[in-house]
Figure 1 (spheres, helix red, strand yellow):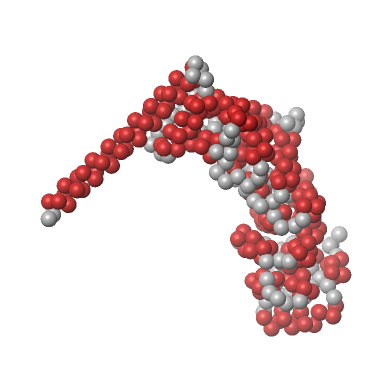
Figure 2: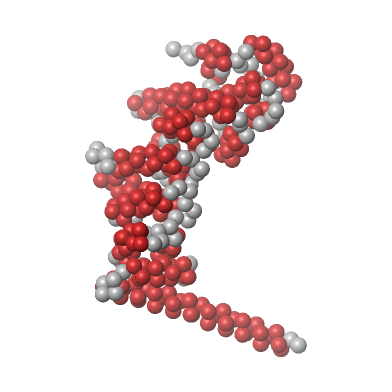
Length: 345
């Protein structure tokens, strides 16, 4: 059964049809003109038409006059962020309505192809990625109530990993955690990850990989935390509990800066034990100072009598030796330069 393109005609006033057609023809309008129109100070009615054409997934669903194809979604990610940033509340909610309408249609088409044993085409995955990027941007701008309504549409899995077998598994989750979305939305995403990990029906291999990806994302948030320390602490508790991802020495300063004071003493100790227990803990040439600082922070959290303290002491000695060695090289190189410079007087 063919889609009915007139299904969405009610969204637009027929009184604007002639002016719209004249604009499309006179401008020989393209997607880029639609972006400009959405960001302009023209009438809301015409901006809604432009937004609809930018988001409708196929010509079969388009009731508007248009001389170009729709549904290609070859827009750069930055363009999506920019054009959704310029929308007022009415257009933001209209965009959310369009995503909520069109995303399930494309998702259903992909699910149908998979059931038939067909390979999902890259262009279809690209459409889903476009909608996912739009949802993320909307989650950073709409009211909490509206965000809770559309969050269920957001895929925290990497689209190309799900259907194309390539790429990071959960890069959209990382994007969400680092965004300006409400903390409640980030808590929902975190809960969704826990449910995936704790699903009794997934294989041990998939659970291991999922935990590794989740832990990697959580540890990375320490560089620039965009949500509460309380939520981050609960995430780090699970990372340590899972025990699959090796927290690196140079991760420690980024993590510990959020967990100062007695209230987080137990968590710091757990993290310190987790890092110190790794077989390959060492300080090499890259990021020596940060790794050395991490080792010193870990040693501070360990009991002096703990056998791991001696191990960390050796690592610190290794780091100090590397720092001293590098300083000697720098001094030697500077001395040679000074001598040569003086010879040129």
